Length: 294
Image (tube, rainbow, N blue to C red; front, side, top):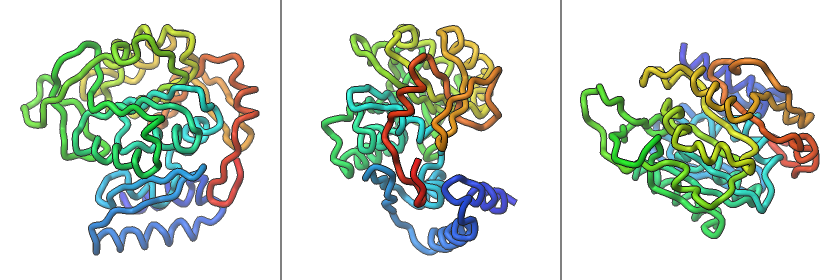
C-alpha cells in the first residue's frame, strides 16, 4: 500500500503530471536499482544547481522522481529571492533549499544542520555547486535557549531532538537560538524543517521574526510537534502574532492567495509579510522544470 500511495503521489506531482507514465516507470526503475546497488546520485536542478544524495535516504525517491519535491514552495523561493537577499535554512539536511537559494537564485544563505553525518553531506553539496562564498554552514541545532540536547542520528531526513521524557539514546549536540546566530544581520526568507521542534526554535527567534526585513517563512506542518505535545496550531498562532499571513502559491501564475487557518495537513506552510510580494514575484527569474517554464 505504501508503494502504491507513493506511486500515485509521484504521477500526480506537477513535475510528472504531463507524463505520468514516465514518472511511474522512473519510480519502478528506481526501486529496482536501489535494492541492487548502494550508490550516490547527482540530480540536476533548475538554474544549473545540482544535488548529491544517497539512494538509501528516505528523501531520495522524491528527489530522483520529482526533482523539486516541495514544488510550490521551492518555486516560490526561486521566483522570490534576489542576489542580495539572505536566506536562512533551519534544518538544512543535505541542503536542497540552500542549493536552490544560493546556486540557482544566487542569494546568500545561512544553512543550519545539527547532525554531523548529515552536515558532512550538506558541506559536500555546497562544494559540488561551488557556492562556498555564498553559504555559511553551521553544524548546530536550534531551540529557545543555548545548551545541549540529544538528537537521533540514524533516521536520515527525519532526525529530530529526542523528547526529554524519552529513553535516552541518540547523540548530544549543541543548540543555540536563531537570534544569536543572526544578531546584527537581516534575513529575507527563512525555511524551517526540524521535525516538530519548530515552536521552540521560533521562540528563540523573536527578534528575527520582529525584524521587518524578514518577508517570508516556509515552515513544515505535518503534526510532528505532537511528539513534544505541541500541535501545529500553536506554531501557526505564534507566526500570525508577528504579522505574517498564510498563503498558497501558484507557480504557473505566480499568484499568492491568502487562506484562513492552517494549511492542509502535511503541506509546507508558506507565510508572507510583504505587501510588495506580488510585483517581486512577477519579475522574478524564470526556471524550467520537466520541460515546462515557470
